[in-house]
Image (tube, rainbow, N blue to C red; front, side, top):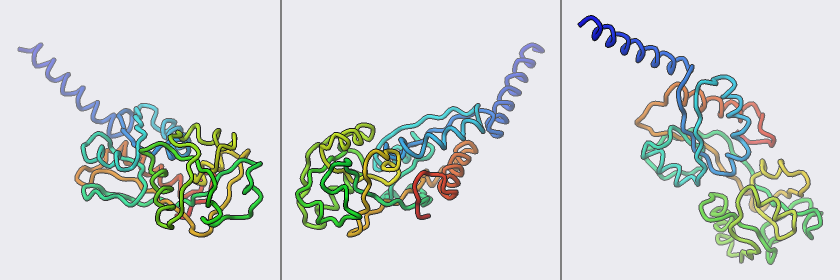
Length: 238
C-alpha cells in the first residue's frame, strides 16, 4: 500500500502546486473577446505588457461583434470581453472604460479633405465604405443615417478593419471610423463630425455570477489602467 499512498500524495501535491501557480499568476489561461476595431488597436500593446508581466499565462483572443461576445460570455466560452455599450444581457457585469469619438476618414485628395470639420449633411451623396455584417461600427453607421433620414450611399460594402484604410486611400469612398483607427493612418485625413457628434462607449464585461480568476482580473485591471493613463494613441474621455 505504501507505493499507492506515495503516488496519491504526490498527485495531491501536484494539484496543490498547480493551484498555487495559477493563484500566483505563474501559469494559467485567459480567454478574452473584443470587437475587431479594438483588437486591432488597443489589444496589441496591452497584451504585450500582460505577457511580459505574466509569461506563464496563455492568452486566447476571439474577435467578434459585441452581441456575439455577450452570448459567448453567458455561455462560459469567454472569461471577459471588451464590448461596445449598451449591452442587453442581464447576466453580465460591465465596467465602463472610456468613450471614444468617431471621425470621418478620407483620402488626401478627397473633395472633403480640406474641410475643418463636417456635419452629417456634408456626407449627402458621398460614397461611403462599410465594414462587413457583424461589426458594431457598421450598425452604428447605418443607424446614424437612418435616424437622420439621410440616404447612405454605399460605394463598397463588406470591408474588414485591416483593409478599410487601404480602400479609403484608394479613394473608393469615405468611412466613419474610431479615432484610434484614424490615428494609426496619418497618411489619410481624419475629419471631426460635429453634428451629430458620434461616440461609442467601451466597457469590459464578464459573467455576473462567476468571479474572475486572478489572471483574468489582472488583465481587466491592465486594460482599464491603459485607458485611464492615456496611453492609447488618441484622447479618450473617461
